[in-house]
Length: 451
Ligand code: HEM
Image (cartoon, rainbow, N blue to C red; front, side, top):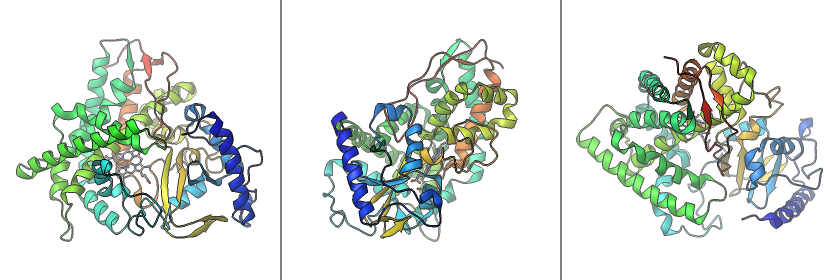
């Protein structure tokens, strides 16, 4: 979408539109907060934000710092969205009910000037249309309430022993070698096994989950290709058929698993429809491992680059694992950006958000905001105040946060205890994606695997 030449054009065009906004009085200013007294128009004549640039994808944090300092809120013409980078704005906007994950409950596509849906996307659209992730109240409230009733704290706690046993089994297997890929041999199989076990996906079918999920979540990137879209449509269709079949089996022959619980859950006479059940299972299976894998990968790489913090964690994994997990989530955020629709006209610090526009909230940037996190560019596993927003805020706050924390803390403490001599073999590479930030691999070697 954006070649090199386009970058120059974008810079010019964005500066022009910012100037236009400025002239119309929509520059970011707030008389009560000096941080916002800077003009929105770029102080240099460049707009550094280009989420398609390989350099940016490799390390977005210096650019985020520039945005927070000079253009904390701006309209990006190339993206066709507002972009918001400071922690105080992102966290307030996530809680603001004038924004929503979906707008289709109040405006049709035609009213928004969007073309009719392409029927080729039907399997993918059917999943989104029935998922709480893409719903607003009252549908969101009903769906989330039903899922919450089935996905109880007791059910999560019952997974503790399985999580520990899976982590140990993966490291037992590593004992036969002196080097592993921390991602493929540990960080991926652990959460996939846990979420599959929780839902009740038979072991023989589990190998299909990760490829289906990877194909579907590629659609959340800002600039997915037609080939990625084709793969996502195919995966959405296959995954849905598989789960429809599995849910029907569970209704005939109930088991003690989450699919059965979701298929039968009832609240005030309401139940999940078949489409909602399928969408919820796909959401849980995908959300239930994608980000967890990347917290582990990005976080371990960060620890290798901060040997003092790694040594501290190793010195007492039980005491530091919880703090380390929160800091890993903050320091290199696995989900960098979430969008919201503007549901009603509103002014935000002088920027005119208009109904039907979209706002890109930069989670990765918010989590490095110096105003909220002293020494934000330092990994510090002993941080006592850590209001990171990696699990989001507001009504869409991550439903799986307690499970993710349990998995990550167990995995990290087990790694530290059993691979005390683990060292990085070479600098890893990031995958070619932006919204979902994660490594391709993380090869480590070690002298021994402790019992
Ligand atoms: C470290 C791992 C995880 C991270 C960083 C993460 C992050 C997030 C974020 C940022 C959102 C909200 C997006 C928004 O506001 O637009 C979300 C929603 C959600 N997450 Fe997670 N998640 C993680 C693990 C999990 C797990 C393990 C599960 C399930 C087992 C899960 C299930 C969900 C669900 C169902 C939602 C939708 C909630 C709603 O729309 O009301 N997540 N997650």
